[in-house]
Length: 103
Figure 1: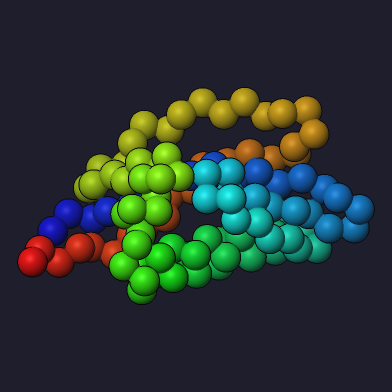
Figure 2 (figure 1 turned 135 degrees about the vertical axis):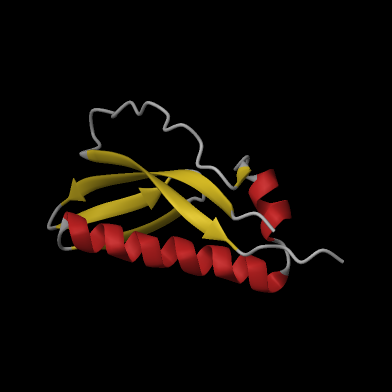
């Protein structure tokens, strides 16, 4: 079975004393005292979100409804990212998905 994954966009912006991190496609957010902490917390939040969908058996359906493309084997070409004026950091992330077992 091929490796499956999704490619998403992370944004990080400073709000007061904290950095707010968001995964645009999955509509998941977190925060931290530093950019690194905000990124780590967002990685954890998106991973838990995907794992929850997989445990419920609705991962593929939900990702499709959200317009998130599932990739197999090879990473897609990195797309250019336009940074909005109020956002300090924009990056891409590759999130692994559980391989489906053929019935």
